Length: 379
Image (cartoon, rainbow, N blue to C red; front, side, top):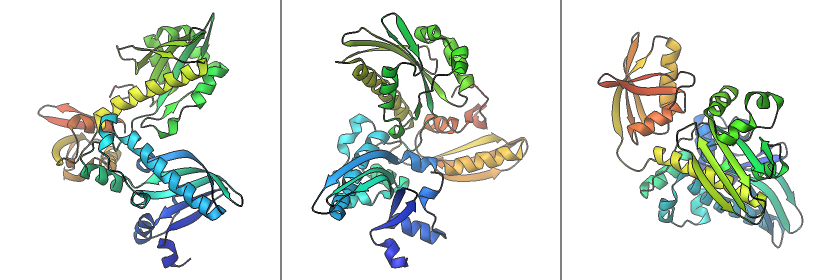
């Protein structure tokens, strides 16, 4: 394939039964960086994963399969753009996002992955993943004064006890609960939600009664079973007619929130319950990490560098954080080194972003200290 053919339209990669297109801007960036390596063949960078929308189903009919495919890809790009805006921004800010043409949307796209592709003479069907260019999309939102996130939080494990009549089910043991879990679009949220499959090991450590009461021991034991993840405990009851009452607690905090869902079926009620709880948690997380188009702030702080490996980890992590524009090592010493960084957002946002990487930034005299986050230590 010639260089010219690479940069015209899309570049096509083959990955088993899946295919990937990279837009010209992304192709040029990769080519000038040295070598062309299909993104589909690599582990996806967490930042690129945050700026991705997966599982878009297209089913287009046209005068021939080529036109149907073009229409399907354009539809997927627009759906993905609307979804990424919902993922990265708060609801009250979305109306200020300018309306864009498909050609303008393509300026922000890194690549398109195609799975389960099927075509006939006049029909095109596929499952599409669209990955956006983080810097380009973030700059666009900042230019229009739209606060948005550039960091995702830790994964969330959902521990759910559901009651119906005299029965109570834990994990995914009930088929209605399992169907509601499978209906959730967890891959396209700012936080990644996991529904553990039932097992004797889980039942031995966590009781259905404890989850129903939202006992604090649920969070302690679940944290041991799922290290590095935040824990969401949910207790719900279906009245057998049209009402679902639920309570939930996130990370074992003192606040237990309640909600009531009315629906024609138990499945619809459970699906809506999950969506509303996840929306609530996502919104709170976004509110703590929103960045806009403001000026960068300079922060000078100390770092615990008694171990050489810690120094390298701190520096590498800081350089990779999207909110950090510049990192300077002012003094390298044992036991404490001095760093200076320029970053966007607030100090609390920086602290939460670092905490998601397992690093703690906390007051130390009249400065701040960077250190390893101890196991089980709250953010």
